[in-house]
Length: 314
Ligand code: SF4
Ligand code: MG
Image (cartoon, rainbow, N blue to C red; front, side, top):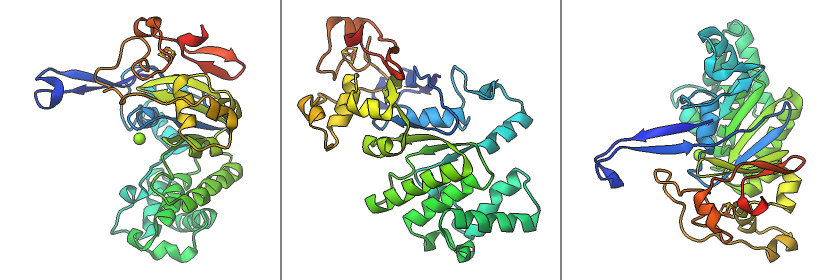
């Protein structure tokens, strides 16, 4: 998958020239039925853009998103509507997707109307059901978004995605705006609902300590590129990519092995307008070699279910 955004001059630091932000440059992964795939990386690495492009909230520049043997990017209007029902997105800030003037019940009925599910009475029943599923009281039906706490609003955001009975949820930083104690409640709820509703999750977050808690597998992104992918336990215990090692050693983990190998990043995240040559991580990598400036490392399997793009392992 590739997604480039054109950037226009003359304002900003482009000196009047047009540029291209390679927000997603080299991303390829599989999402298996019933699993949670965590996509992790610093803000601006392209993980949200990846999620949004899969749902065509933004149009891809190049690539495919295969689902049930069909490319989501090539679907006809009718097929596309059906697909939109099966793949739902949950956002960081559910407030923005809830109309402040509408009661919660009305907001939850909207997706049912869009996808033409049930009659008026069925819809009310479905809303009551989903409220219960996400741990809200029936009387929240009549409340307005501003009457709810952040955690409750995220439960409603989740309910809005789940009410149409989707197969895949793309959750973009679903708990990042919440207090730590509320975060774990929402994560537990996500896990319960996954089991109950047979859901598959693409879980996007910048915080690897959150991602590792919920994910079966993790993909690590840096400046638009997927740089490592592994089963969660394997990634946490034996991360290969220096960037993944740095992400992990920035979190206080009770893992003495990681402490010994503590990797500290130097410098700032480069602008995606002018990504470094070769390995995009070379400007910050403590192990960078000459080859890293010239040659783009490609993803290669190092063991079963573990791939990395780094010249150190070639
Ligand atoms: Fe570091 Fe080179 Fe590996 Fe990139 S390819 S992560 S610069 S060692
Ligand atoms: Mg984001």
